[in-house]
Length: 217
Ligand SMILES: CC(C)(COP(=O)(O)OP(=O)(O)OC[C@H]1O[C@@H](n2cnc3c(N)ncnc32)[C@H](O)[C@@H]1OP(=O)(O)O)[C@@H](O)C(=O)NCCC(=O)NCCS
Image 1 (cartoon, rainbow, N blue to C red):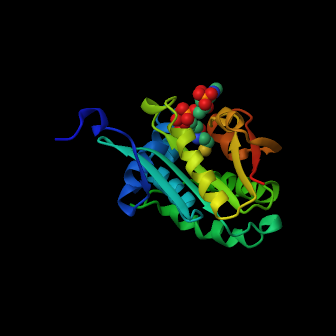
Image 2 (tube, rainbow, N blue to C red):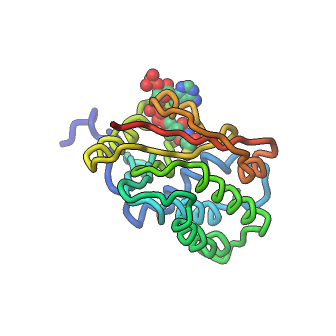
Image 3 (cartoon, rainbow, N blue to C red):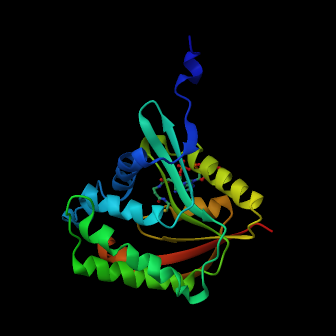
């Protein structure tokens, strides 16, 4: 028989395709569950497009799960290089349009949201420095926050980045809808800010995009 004390220990493992629904649920719960916005963002299928947009640019994808399912995730990039000014990545960004427009079952996102999305993406491309590692998305289920899972996910990513010889980790977040304090406590340094039009649109107040870096040298 299994030892009951270890039965529901959170397990860290690689993301697999069947995890998409549960990862979408985490993103929906983190950013849309309490939203008063109409279906544009509250609609889980649109959130799926959002999560997919991070999956396509990540090559390091780890989830934490327990007996209830996925309770945390970190998607990031290790290796490669972001072209200065963002030229090459723009192709990737444009490739995400269909996912946003159609989600999975024909769910539409309004042109206004798309406009804010690409405007913000462009600012991210311009403002985030060239790096060889990047955090794209980190979420822990609200019922499991404050137990160290976010830090453990980050520790694993940083260890993998160091092992791959990376020198600089970058990320972008915002001051209204995301937990930027977590990054500062972890040791990231704020290196830039810009007006975040997408978050301002959803938060219905002025939001600032924040660029953070962590030096691994
Ligand atoms: C960011 C997030 C993943 C952190 O996960 P978590 O499992 O709760 O974080 P941890 O328990 O590992 O916290 C690590 C440290 O940060 C601290 N911390 C985390 N959030 C904090 C906050 N809002 N204010 C102050 N301290 C905070 C913890 O107290 C802990 O400090 P310690 O190491 O001194 O004990 C989680 O808050 C989350 O999913 N938020 C919603 C999604 C989001 O905003 N993601 C980030 C932007 S993409």
